[in-house]
Length: 209
Image 1 (cartoon, rainbow, N blue to C red):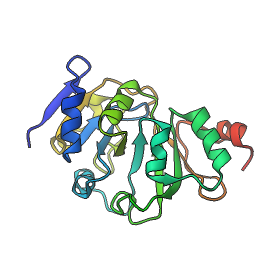
Image 2: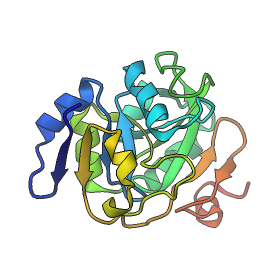
Image 3: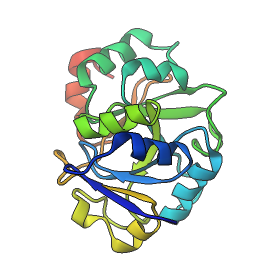
Image 4: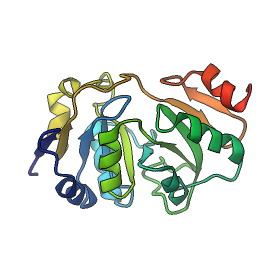
């Protein structure tokens, strides 16, 4: 494995994207915490994320998108459509992950064999550029070995974890430093994890739940 490190001064998006699309893993900054990502259409790359994190396949990855239009490639917005569109409009890009019904094309490895997928558009220009260059969607989770704290800056990503990834992007400090809020919108709205967006903020947009 030939490892390469990019930073804000030596960013080469075409070279980076070519390697990610070939199935290599990437550590990159988002608005919340540093993530480790892979393309969604290569199961071997998805499995590498789980191995790098020493994580069981029972914990699904989420999809980070560079544009709202990419959501329809992987998920259905058929229930609560009005509320979901409002959430995307008001909180994306931002720290809100929305759980939707996955499309059949999504690998079961990515979603732990389930029928749902978490989707988010990060509020971080470099992350959006990287995701767009790699095809508009990256399967992503926090860049840490399971049990370690989620890294808020590049220097907090453990050296051991870095060794397990081919492409490293040093983008400094993440703005928020906390993980995204996760809301399941397949039926009645249900918050699964509290994070960068509060329930009160969500209720101002879609009403009490």
